[in-house]
Amino acid sequence: MTENRRTNDPEGVRRRIIDAAYDAFVSQGYVATGMLELREKASVSGGAMAHHFPAKRDLGLAVIRDRVADAVRQTWIEPLQACADAPTAIDLIFGSIIDELMPKGSVSGCPLNNMAMEVSRHDPEMRDVLSGIFDAWHDALSARFQADVASKRARDLNPGSLATLTIAAYSGAMAIAKARQDVGPLVDCRAELAAMLATKYHLGT
Image (cartoon, rainbow, N blue to C red):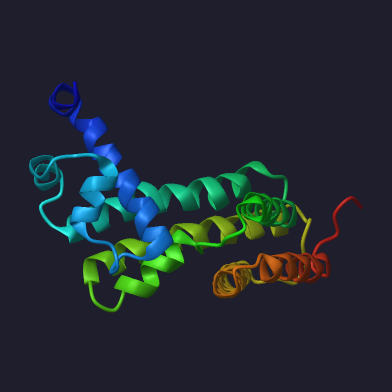
């Protein structure tokens, strides 16, 4: 049964490997995770692993492209595009993340930040792919701020600079939350970003 699944569902096998690697890379780190461990977590043979990912670096790139990029898209970019304005979207995003983390009692950190911290200095291709994800995140925030200015919801703000500040604030808060294993820094960051944005927006008027 297992062999048939491996033979007849190569995409399913590939997805299982990527899913196992994503979970491991986020929870314990890219460098600390071995390929044998991932084979066991994904329940695949050595041949299947080698067929899909001949080297750990190939798997790392696939995780970044398939899962990390998707996580940023779902967590940040889609809410920014769906909400009426940036403050509403940002508050919703922080609230969703905090609500998800609190029952777990642990904080693994931001997948994008985790991977960027580990590999960006050492692998130019991984760095470029990670940078592209940051760029897409920044572009989505900047576009949302720019649209808010155009619709006269906001005033006296630089969309690009404010996008950078928002990403930096979130990333820093998540790093502190991971170090402390406590969502408190995310709660504080959410409140301070909301207060700051309130000075630049005139919503509901």
